[in-house]
Length: 357
Image (cartoon, rainbow, N blue to C red; front, side, top):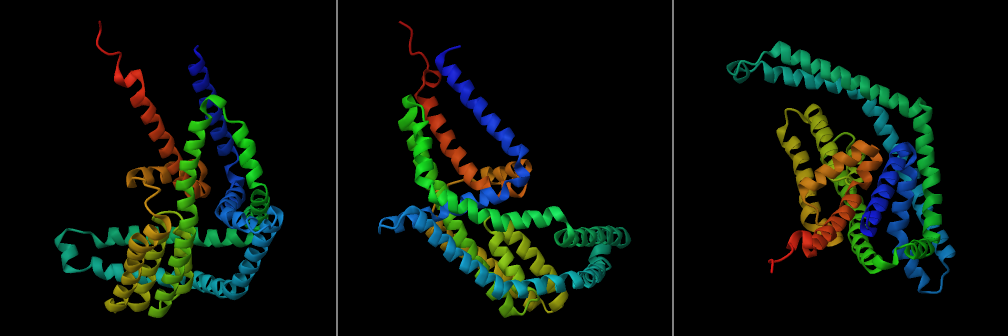
């Protein structure tokens, strides 16, 4: 085995070992991933404070203290209202389901449904079965959130462990980067550092930009839905903004929930239902043509098909944590693949051995 082959086997083996270890511990990854993402996003702030003579420890402590104050302020102001809306929504869910069934039933019994040979009874039975399963699932979910020890421990670990992880990573960021840099093989140091800078640029553009985009979208959706008068508009709007960190998820969840509630609350006033649609369409235009180009830019540069594949694959391996890391990981893999293609096009394997003499 040649030296290059040994290197290739070593790095492939190391990557596979790391992947297996992450899959094995995926159930406890969330607070650590959240803490690392928070430290990564706030590193420029700590570096900026350092330029004014503030030590790294003091800068990290000050940043986390400010975030803690903001977090508790939000908890005191918004959480009671959001919990009230969640409880009310859970109580009204069965009546919403019944109302939607009645609306679908009237549509199924219309003349055009009979013209296409649609059997109202079989469709109604399928809808009833689907709705009942949805109610059971929702009831079980709320029950597990309140009484399930694993869920409570998970939420507690997210709220308690994440700030500590973020603080220690923020404090030791430069030292960690320096120690990793000293482990880079000397023969490939320049290539590795160039790739690391390119990956950092793309991931930083997404993480820091998407956090701001999600925050602004949450405010926009919440104000728009509350202004329309939609029940639970504040809860749905803020949840849509938070879930916007995962592409397509925030819009899909918020839009489907809003339309379902609007049909029950406003039907048959289609003007108000159209207003809900307009809020989400304007939100998408705002995200796609204003917020993302200005706050994220085109630096991530992921093809939509590759983006969807990354979401599915990462979600399958790591669950919800996988959805959070899918886009940064896909951006990093894209940089490495482009580098590999560049080297392949320079190699004899692509160019050939040339004309024989």
